[in-house]
Structures are given as C-alpha cells and as structure tokens.
Image 1 (cartoon, each protein chain N blue to C red):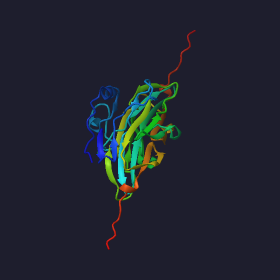
Image 2 (tube, rainbow over the protein chains, first blue to last red):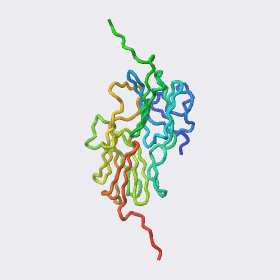
Image 3 (cartoon, rainbow over the protein chains, first blue to last red):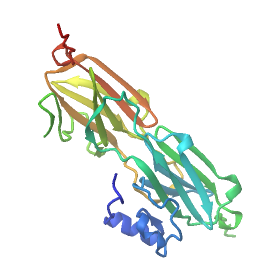
Image 4 (tube, chains in turn blue, red):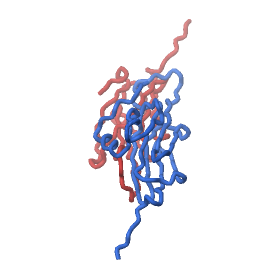
Amino acid sequence: MLARIEKYQTVDSLIGELLGFSRDPDSLSGSAVESPAVEDATFAPPLDVTENKEEVVVVAELPGVKKEDVKISLEKGLLTIGGKRGEETLSGDARGLLREQQKGKFSRTVRLPYEVNADNVSADLSDGLLRIVLPKAEAARAHEITVR
Amino acid sequence: MTQLNNAILKKSDVEPGPGASLRAPLSVPASDISEAGEAYVLYLDMPGARKEAISVTVVDEMLVVRAPITPIHGEGATILYREIRTGAYERRFALGEGIDRKNVDARYENGVLAVRLLKTEALKPKEIVIK
C-alpha cells in the first residue's frame, strides 16, 4: 500500500487551498485546516462545494464505499469526511490484472465558507456519491433588501 | 494499447465513439480487473451514473462501457469549488479470442459497475486426472 498519496500540484488544488479546501493530508497542519482526521489516509476523494440561499452542499465521490464505512464530523467550521474503501470480494484464487481504483483509508477536510446549523446537517450516500446538506445559520443567510 | 494478459484481454485508450458529444467531455473510469477461475471481472468506478442509463456493449471485438454522468447540482446552486467530473463516462476494452462474447453479465452497485466475462472453453482451467 502507498504510504502517502502523491502530492497534488494542480492549479485546481492551489485555488482550492486558497479557499480553504485541502486535499493533501500532509498539508493539514497548514493554515487552511487545523488537524488531520485520519492520520494514515491513502487517498483524498474528489469533491464539489456549492451553495444556495439556505444551504451549503458538499458532494464527494465515494464509489465502492459502504454507508457504514463513512464518518462525517463537523467541528469549528471544519467538515471532515473520512472512512475506508475495501476490496471487492472475490474467490480466494482471484488474480489482479489491473489496479487503478483507489482503496484503503480516505480523508478530506473542508473549511466551510459559512456558519452552519450543525444540528440539522443531513447526509446521503447513493450511486457512489455522498451528498451532505448543511443549512446556513440564520446570520449567514442572504437577506434581500427591498429598494423603496 | 497496454497489453494485459497475452492477448486475452487488452486495455485500450479511450476512443470517443460517434455518440460522444463535444459538449460532454469524456471521463475514463478508474478500473480494476481480476481473473478468477472461469471468468474475468472488470470493476469500473462510475459514481453518479444511473443504472438504467449505463450501456455495456460488445462491438467489433471491443467491450464498450458508456454512461452519462447525472448532473449533481440543483438549479439555484452556485459552485464554490469543483473537482467532480461532468459529461459522460466511456471506456473500451479490447477482447481477446478467449472471451465468450455471449456471456457478459453486468451489475451496478455503490457507484461501481462490475462486468463479468466468461472465458471460452479453450481457456478454462482444466484439472488433469492422474491415472
């Protein structure tokens, strides 16, 4: 097993790091994120973050991951998705010819752009996509001002 | 082309088919392939596909897997950060002589498509009886 996932050096992730989304477990001690959720994570699943008037929505790709193997935590404005992806179960004499899928422990931490209502967070895992809906705290919601 | 197993099963790079729209970039699903006894099993990571929209076909000695990626964000959503692929999945695998084209079984679960290909008689492991 890989000791560490290779460093991501894409422009995308640099932009992400500026926004506070870290996908490199090694960088968790940096300013964006305060503490590693899973010390020995081997991969960081891709994710999207969106918002609408009432909610922040985080969607992560977790193909082959079972519901019971995902842990989500929210602390001090940091949302952490962690867990593990096991091997497909085949008969004992199966021989691997190609190995591209990422297996093992994963972890991803997002600094949420708004204060959220932690008691009303919901999460759903289906077709390999984890969708976490975080309602914005009342103070963080956009209020429309009527021009008189 | 990367040869996988003595011309029995080969992996090819993506060749966009005629159905591939220019507006929909193609994603190559990460895949594992296992060989077990009488079969090969291909596992393709296809999160966000819908079971009924996945097509698995054998055309011209190629196994072709395609599926549109269902848009995951609602109408009013503003994207703050994006890594998840959009468009469609497509991947082709060249089939060697030893694959039974009429016995292809596919199932989709937890965002992973598993395609089971049976070996033809000539390739199945045979036990030799000692007389």
